[in-house]
Length: 152
Image (cartoon, rainbow, N blue to C red):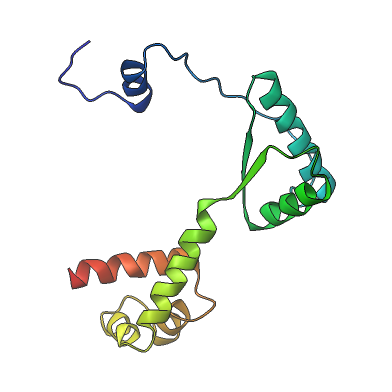
């Protein structure tokens, strides 16, 4: 293998820890129900705990969006013995979305709306909406990128 080429993460980890076996990725069966149905969330959690135990893992780490995370927290609290070793994590999207909302709140009424409108990137109402409470995620992301390029 050519050592001048940077390896991918798996190859890097294999070189760093040659005694460790490669991870195995597993998938749950498809569930044709709403992911925010409490019975679906509980069944999924049960299946994941059993899968982790079968692999010899003590802990089961589950990541979910806002709705499923809140349901999973409630279920874990209702069945503490069954889900004692379950660690629940909120996915990354809500954090990024809240970060964008914070940036937009700081920039609101700073003149950024006028700058975007005068540059012809959008109309005044759209600019005001992007920096408002109900700003759309992808519009805000695009606008913040443009402003970052213009400022720096």
